[in-house]
Image 1: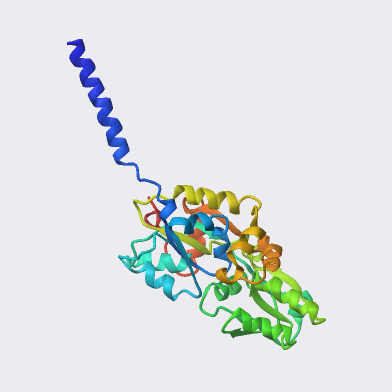
Image 2 (image 1 turned 30 degrees about the horizontal axis):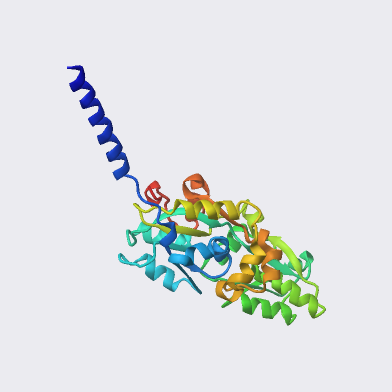
Length: 296
């Protein structure tokens, strides 16, 4: 009887081990395929770039059209898609995507650049960009006190041109373009500086670019690497940028990126750890956050 009991016990333990192992999803970080917008979000991947492209791939795209199209596909080739959180959340609220929210990687990089803070009290125009998108939503939410009349331009680059031409004294820019504009102004004898940090005005930053992936997949080693890089000291950032090339990432010079890295607010945070911030931000878009939006 004791022998039979021992045999049954061993059998049950073996079945338990097999059952556990069958539920374990293999880490596929080495062969991952990623779609990411150019600009600040791309910086999250510079430390992991060489490992990603060794057997996998990462495509950087300008604008949100392709991001939205791939998120809405049932058979997208991409394992991970980085996109504005409101874009992915909108699709999830309509049950129009099979992707789920994994993490936030940028926490806002919008700044008012101007000749002085006093310029906000003068008459004239404030040059803005991002009408109908996050920049307009944040600018209107923080409600900067100013007598300037808002005028929207099609891009941050056009706002930069207005500032450098002296047509306006205050403009809304995202980093690293804000730092690049200040540098160009200095070369032309124009003194510009950051006069308002919209993240501070909002209350400490807001969830902007997010990582979306599908349930039942595992890229933990990649996420651990991104976490360590973006929440550390951005080790080897300059060397990584030189190797990859800033043109690939849709960024200005290496010097400007390095100088502005802290203001770009690239910090990996698990979505499950910042649900309050996500909930409040999505309210701006009349989207109700649900735990079902998170990767399980």
